[in-house]
Amino acid sequence: MSSMRNAVQRRQHRERGQLDNRAKWGILEKHKDYSLRAKDYNLKKQKLGRLREKAQDRNPDEFAYGMLSDQNARQGRHGARDTEASSLSHDTVKLLKTQDAGYLRTVGERVRREVERLEKEVQLQDGMAQVLGDDKTTRRGQEDEDDEDLDDLLASAAKRRKIIFAESQEDQKKLGGLLDDSEDEEMSDDDEEDDSFGKRQQQQENKTKQPSKKQLEAERLALSQKRAARKLKRRAAEGRVRRLAALKKQHAEISTAERQLELQRARMTNSIGGVNKNGVKWKVKERKR
Image (cartoon, rainbow, N blue to C red):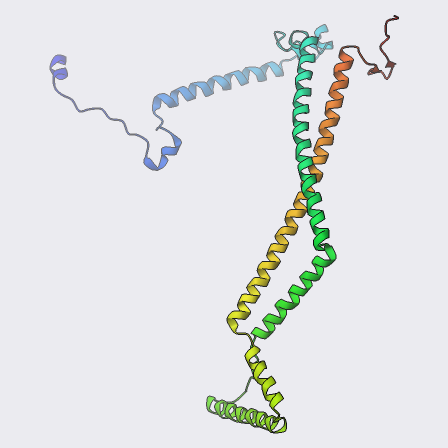
């Protein structure tokens, strides 16, 4: 019977997989995965329970001489952190300090070259500022002049308007016409009073000299671009000075560290005196010749 059952083609066994919107959580957990996770959880819970029982049953009067020494806590269970076994030899430490000194020397040389380059740029910048008269007072005066020119352009670009208040649009048109007639009469009276050829020519020149709206816009744009370029130049100069100060500070720190390393190496080779940790001064005694 079993052979007949095995001979018949069966439906392929398929397990449900993880949903697409939950693919970031990994594959779908099956019962075997849950059982392994549960066994591990129960094993850890049992270990914690046994440790709690040992802590409750601990004898407070228990004593061992090893408790007086911190060597066990320092070196671990099997002496893995023993200082004598893990400490470096004297020659190895000297070699490491030599490599550190070489690295500091290389970095210090690179910083020194950068400082020299920036100093030359700052000197050139100061010289050009003195020749062109581009100091702080002149810069402030130029900025004030630009602001005044910009204000004048904006004021000239704005058209003067007369506001007429009326109850209706028809009354407003009538009042506007009367106002135009009065202005024309005033202009004609002025022309009659000043009917000289020079006055007329001057008025004509004033009319022709008034710039157009495009010219005013172009001048305003040129002034704003000039101010932006001057501000960008000033910021670049200030950034160059700040960078130079930071590099000088870094070079001083590197030089100090290099000198300290040289002193440490000299003390390790007993070629220079110093002060020990107890504050006692000592010096190397040279052999009598």
